[in-house]
Length: 239
Image 1 (cartoon, rainbow, N blue to C red):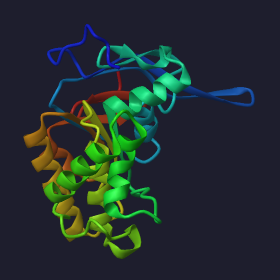
Image 2: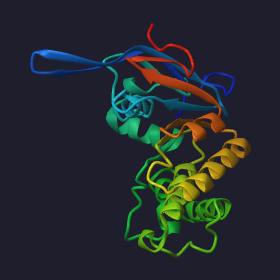
Image 3: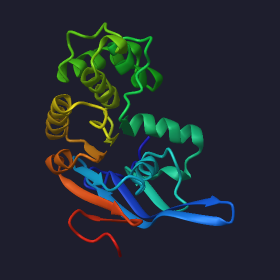
Image 4: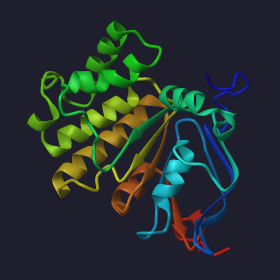
């Protein structure tokens, strides 16, 4: 469902002058103003910044889970906010993967069934979804845990299942919100290794919001969101 004129030579994400404000009574709160960001196919961008800077809000805008107050968000050449809600949900399912700090796996389903879910709910048949889910779980080191439910898995294993689930529809971009934020240091390092391996092998774009500066610098380009502005880390974000 991506724009037929889009090619991988163009940005997967092209975020143009987006502003997000909230109105509380007589006051208008500006989270960020006129932010632009381009992410190329196969590129990984880490977004860092202090708590409350708006990192998760920005990620939600990039994923079509929220709408900017002004500006455009193009995913694979498609202005996602011009789509009606049902079409936008279908577009997200096909073109984007999501990984959160808390894995949001369905507790009554096995690891295999959780990973199959986005494919089975989309255009993929159940048989194909099962084959892809099994292969992805093997890639993330969980080939022996297919029949285990989330309650039978460790925190790191659950996050690996969530990462496999985000990849099952072969999205152009995966958005990650603090993927190691709820893990102990050793488990976080193993998930860092997995993310780095996947981004090198799969050729898809990753945008990762993180407080983990080690993870951010391992992944690629690092942007800092501060004072309502986005700038390369190390440069002043006050424009």
